[in-house]
Length: 281
Image 1 (cartoon, rainbow, N blue to C red):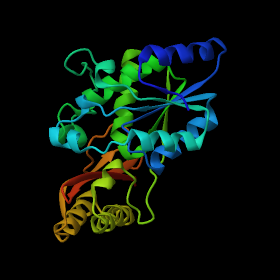
Image 2: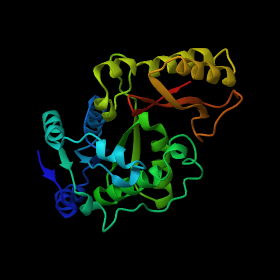
Image 3: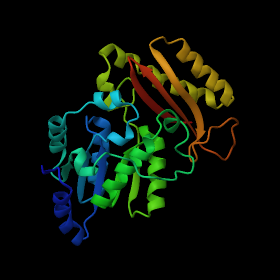
Image 4: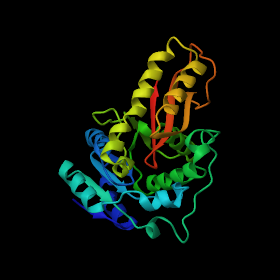
């Protein structure tokens, strides 16, 4: 498998493919690859002639220096994982200095309020950082399609907004959340949990499922109160937020309306590790 760490080398590799009108799928990651990432790669392989997987721990999307420092990194293992999947994938793993000149800083975007709730409210600057690196990757690779997991559902809407704002010719392909057997959403952060913590963390999805079951016959306020009570009775967890929102606008819902689609979002800490999940209602 070919591994590139320089933008020009990657572009030189891709140029003949574009001349031949080949399709290119991009799977942007921060590494520490798991089956969730692999599901994105498999879908990209099905739908494109060539796949580029980027591994880059992007400093501008971390609002917590300790979180950035502790983010799991294992490029050698990631490369072996990708190589075992297909020879139609190349890996792009640049240094920070290759993607940012000087001090890494975020671009300026108007997300029309999508960044003011949930992750945006609790992680200031996070989505500007995400949009900045994704825009850089889109301009570099010029992919036909780009693949993102719905665990980061809010991020997908943010990137859609950025793509529309910048007029970038890429199709975004949202992919379902991949879960461990316990129901825990797969995440690179799960690696930081103890085996006991990992088992306990399945509680997050169980509560989401219960919220979904209650949503049909209960008010939004009742569902919220139930979930908050469940977390209050679970001392291993610190609940950061639980929200039910309009899944197109991310505006918090207070009353159910027949013509709207709703989604529940949760962020919680266990063993000092912040986990997020969501479920369509």
